[in-house]
Length: 343
Image 1: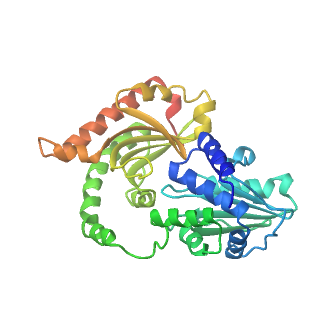
Image 2: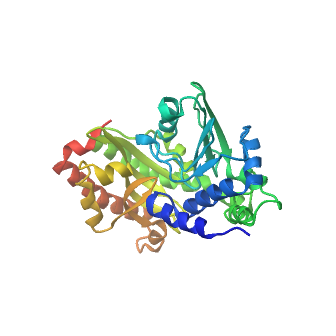
Image 3: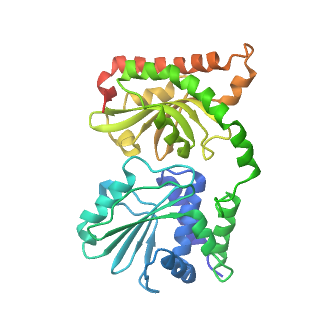
C-alpha cells in the first residue's frame, strides 16, 4: 500500500503555483506521481516513447523551471536523458510554448551531453510541426494512449488515473457518440449565426486596432473550444491577444459564453508594470479575470441569457453587449495608446 500523503501535499502546492484548470492540475500531478512511484507503469510509458529508462536513478518532477522559457508540466531526468512533457486537456498550446521549451533544451548548458526529448500530450488531435535536431526529439501523445497503457498489474493510484481519464472521455476519442451526431446536425447553422456576429466586429477591430484575423482563421480556434475574431497586439515588447467571440471552455464555465477576452502572458501581467492599466478592467462592471494558460481579462456573458430576450432578436442584443465591452477597451486605448500597438 502506497502512502498517499506525498501526492496530496504536492498536489496542493502545485495548484498554488500553476495556471491550469483543476482537472489539468490533478491529471498532471497524478501522472507525475505514477511515473515516479509505479516502476511497471513507467516502464510501459518508456516503451510508448521508444525510450530506455533505467529502473533506478529516475527523477520525475512537476515543479521544474526551465529558465525564462516557462514551466513544463512534467520533467523526467536520468543521468543521460531529459524529457519535458507539456500536458493539455481542454486548452491548447500557448503561443510559442513548445518552441520555447525546444530552444531551452537545445541551448541549456546543464543538459548539453544528454538526450533531449519534448513530449506534447493532449486530449484532442492537435498536430504540431517541430523539427528534430541538435539532439532534440519531439513526439506527440494523446491521453487515450496513457489510458491504454494502464493494466491491473499497476498500482492503485495508477488505476485511479485510468478511471479519471475514462470519466472525462479520454479513453477512446476516435469513437463517435450520440452527442457528436446530434451536434453535426446543427453545426452549420450554429457557425453561420456566430459568423454573422463576428463579421460585424471585423471592421471595428481593423479600424480601431489596425488588424483582425481572417475569416478562415476562425476555424482554427474551434480546437480550443472557441470561435472568435482576434488581433495580436503588443505593450512595449510583450505580445498579447484581444479576441471577440464565443467560448465554451468546460474547465472554466458550465455554459458557452459570448464576449471579449484579453490574453496576457501571466508572468508579464503579474511582474511587469506595463499592464497596470489593464488591471483596472477587472474593477469595471461586468469584467472578470482568471488564469488559463495566460492571464485572461474577460467581459463575457452566458449565451443562454440571450435566449430569454423579449425582443427575440439575439443578434442585436449580443451586438449591443459586445459594443458596451469594446467601448471600455477603446477608452483604455485612448488613455494608454502605447499599450495597444499592432504587432
